[in-house]
Length: 439
Image (cartoon, rainbow, N blue to C red; front, side, top):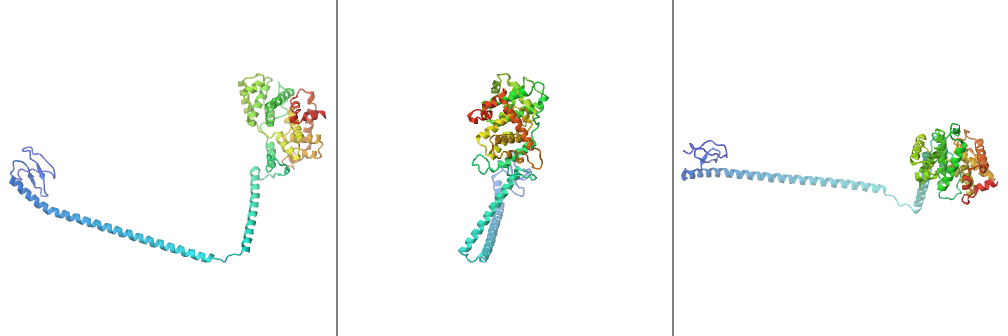
């Protein structure tokens, strides 16, 4: 009777009968079902409970046994893992002990071999002396190597530098680089041979239409006066005149813009050489406000592009400084040479000669003026020529340049170019111009 009311259900599922709303539960593997409805009697329910108890009693011991077996297997595995770890540790310790024993044996054998009888005091002193001698020789060789490497940095391998340009061992001045002075002079001569592009051509006045030699001399004289009042360095003056000559040898210029060229050249030179640079308004004020700021900037751009932004060159004042050191010039001698060089800027022929020739010519004039016995050394080839075998410049060039300088200086009092005379007539410059005028 019980099974007739039971319908097929899935395992552990609950379904509701549409007729009597009874619940069906799966309770065993044999697909036996029971009904918990209120309509059934209590006796049948007790029978079902008895059957369930029997089945549970059979199942529970089996599950317990399986659990116990799993626990034992785990314990066995843990014990085996612990044994393996112990064996590995023992093996590593044995290896380390063997290695340490081998190392100690090797050290003992080395020490036995290296043990020697203690040296006496005499032997120790001899060894120290030998070491000191070897160290000294090493240091001397190292110094010679360093000097050679330093020279190679400045010079080509093919060129043989004449290191004995000057002998300045007697001078005790910290500011003079005695070690490098010959290399510096050699590099100045090398730069002079390379030249700068475009080079100044002293015949450019024949191509100019609105200006002439006199107008150039007036402009240079005015620039010398401005240069002295501003207190600029000597390099700025020589650079400004070089920029003017180089620009005029390429381009034509009008009279109205001639002074504008002088201002822009001075401004460019100041940007190269000076620390405290005057403003553009200051340069315009010097010209009595003859120009505007825009005109100065346009002229500066034109000069920069036409001269390819190259302005640095070895000026005569650089060569003359080293010559005055070599010949032992006093302050009076040095100032006279500067006066001659600056006065020679008034003449267009200044661009005809190279800076080293002008400096040697000024040294020649000074030494002859003060009647020095070694004046003929001033036109030695080593001071103005890299290669002694090739006579690019000879004694004739220096003497010709000296004649041009003397002609200009002797007649400068008759001209209106008085800036150099006033500048070097002061006691700060040893009154050099007055000395020349009186003799």
